[in-house]
Length: 176
Image 1 (cartoon, rainbow, N blue to C red):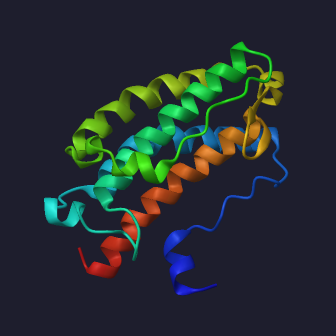
Image 2 (cartoon, rainbow, N blue to C red):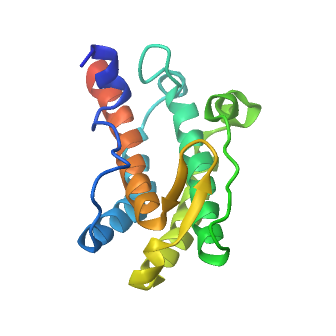
């Protein structure tokens, strides 16, 4: 694995084809529930200059990363709700790199941290309320095909850890 690959995927790539068992659900839900606090801890006491530092060469800044997590998790939450209330809905993809270039990605990180607090309380409540058979409900992603809520849950548990690891890795490399 190339050095830049390590910086892109510090906890490894998500395997969407991995076998998922019901026993894996509580851990993934816990990772999603913990994300706002873990992210806050990861960025604690960073200056604006540090927040505006890319976490890897040609990557987003820490500030953009925080806002990206809010963008992604808002979409993930909406997709969860769609899959629970519609029969295999087709979801709308978005260009995360273009979203990261929009003006709101330069706002103070507290804006997205507050959003993540509320969003994750609601999303976690939904995940914890599901009956076992509901995890097999699906949505259709135009780029990657059908996805079960079980896979979606595991992906966002991974996503929560993945981006926190980016910030922790940068802090370690920079001695912050």
